[in-house]
Each structure stands twice: as structure tokens, then as C-alpha cells.
Image 1: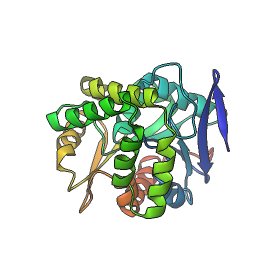
Image 2: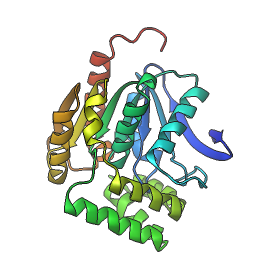
Image 3: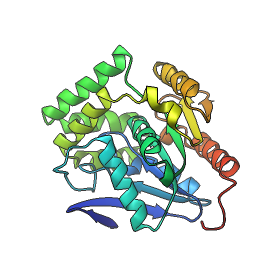
Image 4: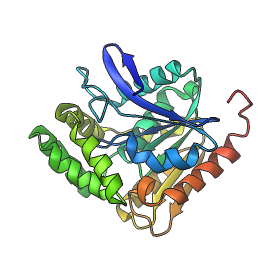
Length: 263
């Protein structure tokens, strides 16, 4: 089981394939296994990297609070460990916010970004209530309930559900609560204009709550493409995997044509 020691904390990660590197960032409770279909489909052409954020899945508990800058630094340390200078940074849902933070603070270590069902801030009342409920459940150590709801929502088969659920159960309640809490108050909308790299935005047509965030990012990011998948809801990596993989492949192959044979 590949583990990277970062200042006394072990970070679980996986690497599969060769080519342009893509790093995937998961939201709270879930783990890198949520990108199972991206690992399987995209590793035929790219180097696909997943990891479990501290206090999630197979990664150890963190004494340092889980905030986006810490996750960004962990990604950079992981890339250093793998001898990779730059990668495409891809985040799903709250992980999309982390991807934006990475692009803002470490553009020299990125080739571009991909935001799937993500946001630059939490603006609407419904999403605020959902995250606040998750914080409350994590505070009350009700991780099994969170794990059940989130794993079920992101599964398209019993096998995948079992994997996501069992890994989610191992998460640390404090670190999960910290990740949720930071996401509730995070806001980088006014900084989006400072991201100098191409960004692919992918949203589901049926994920109406997030259409506002898609529009917000599309209007404020200097170099972006917005793609909306028909019939898709929020859980695109697992429930619209083929469409997502095709969009990602096209984006990377057409946008990263300056990348040389170093990969």
C-alpha cells in the first residue's frame, strides 16, 4: 500500500498509467476511490494520481487542522515524491474549491485545472444548510450516517457502494468536520481573475442548484471551458464517468498540446 510520510503523517496515494499527470481531489468523507472510473478509463493515456486527504480513508489523522492550503501543500509534496513538476489538478465538489486554491497559490506547479460540480464559494441557503448539517453530524461523531448517505449518493453499484462506505467509515470525525467547516466559509470568487491557467468546468444539467456556481466560475475565470452533461446530476465522476472521461481527455489533449515528451 503506497504511503507517503509528510511530517509524521502518512498519506495514502495511488498512481496508474503514463503521460500527462492528473491529480484528483475528493470532497469530505469520500476518498480517492470515488475516482475509480477515472483511474480505469484515463490511465490508458495519462498518469492518474489519487490520494486520501488526511483523516480520510487510509490516510492518517492530522494534528494540523484540515484547511485548503494544507491539502495544497500535501499535493505538492506528493508531486515532489513522484518527481513530477506540474500536473493537471482536478477536484470534485468541495474538492473543486481545493483545486481553485491550488491554481491560485501554486500555478507554477500546475498545467491547468478541472472543476467537477464545484464552487468558488458557498452562496445559496440550501447548500449552506447541507454543509452545516454535515458539520453537526461530524461533531457528534455520526460518521456512519454521513458515510451511508454520501456513499450511497455517489454509487452506481453495490460493489462501489461497499468500497466507498467502508473507506468512509475509517475517516476521523474531527478532520472531516474541519474540511466541511472550512468549505462553508471559503470564498475565492474575487480572486478567480488571477488564475492564469486553462480550466475545464463540468456540471450536470440536472444539478440545478450548482448552475449558479457554474455561471459564476465561467464568468470570472479568464481561461475556461464550460461543459454541461445532459441527464447528469451532481455525482458526475461515478454516475456520468464515460462522459466526464471523454471531456477530460479532449480538454487535456487539445489544451495541453505544448506539453513535450517529458511525460
